[in-house]
Image (cartoon, rainbow, N blue to C red; front, side, top):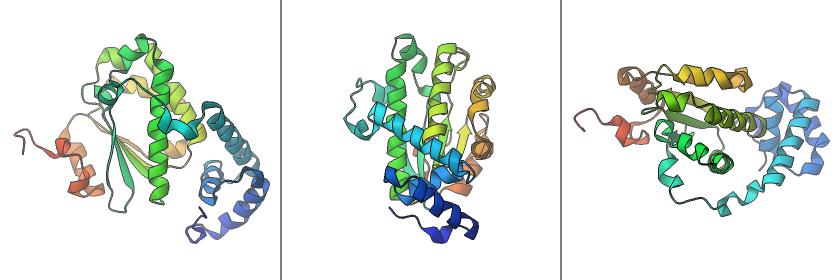
Length: 240
């Protein structure tokens, strides 16, 4: 895919062309090159190191064949997610009910590496979705149901840290916004654990809300048409 350079500033075009020449052997789409270049603030050397490292990792884990990866059938219910709707600018949305995930139990059951693969498969689907829409994507994380024991489970936090680190390194500039809703106070402990590896640019895209629906629902309505918000979130306490 050739990048839409009309969306770039004049300051971007020259470093982009130089970067494209430097990594011509990688045979990557212009849109991919732009993501990595922007992620490293147009530092050509750092951008080249980043994209080569990312592509090496993709080769090592055979990420291109993620659709053929096999997972236990219960992952679909215990680690559910869904792509649903678009914001007012047409950017797609990924809804992740992390509070209902049974990650702690699965990690304790020795399934940590498999959970990472599940997460990377989810991100790959998201990457394809944003590429098909020629946009970045929105992520809505619902923490309803998150318990203290889940939020402070060290092995799960380490796995989450590892996953976030890989996402920052290998999937730059695909996020438009992250909206966290129904966050209990204990979420702060886990967030602070991984915050250090999240770039400042990404942190600025994250908004965190507590359990007061009157606070976060207006934000969702500002960003998404009603038909693009999960119905179970729109319903009031009376089920309407």
